[in-house]
Image: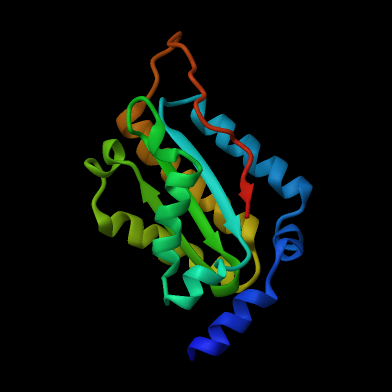
Amino acid sequence: MGRLMRILRHRWFDETDTRRALGEDALDRLAQRVKDSENRHHGEIRVCVEAGLPLSYLWRGATARERAVAVFAKLRVWDTEANNGVLIYLLLAEHAIEIVADRGVSRHVAPEYWARILEDMRADFRAGRYEAGLGRAVDAVDHILLQHFGRSPGSPDRDELPDRPALL
């Protein structure tokens, strides 16, 4: 896609598009799904949906992955005590999804695992089933965090990040 067309496409999308893609009820259900997941392990899951890339990213030809890494830092997903935060990032303008995991999680997960998860969800996003795709991503991340950061009964819950998806 040409640079100008990409800029126009991203500028066309705004917060109303994120609200249309995920209404209040969907956001509530995703927040509850994250909360339920985090009750089973010590990891942190953060979901972020962004309508389009900021103009500065578009101007320099940045990828959705580059933006996801920046959002990972902006939302402080990297700042968990055990370095076990995971960001699930959806860019509506490109139907792009990225998963960024902190180093405590990355050492346990092969990049191929994340690639398989992303591929499974792309069909949901192409069809406009954003909640279903994000829910599938939360479940996949939950599986990894439960496996490597599972919580024993009676251990304290330390919720370090908001459960509700961030809309940018």
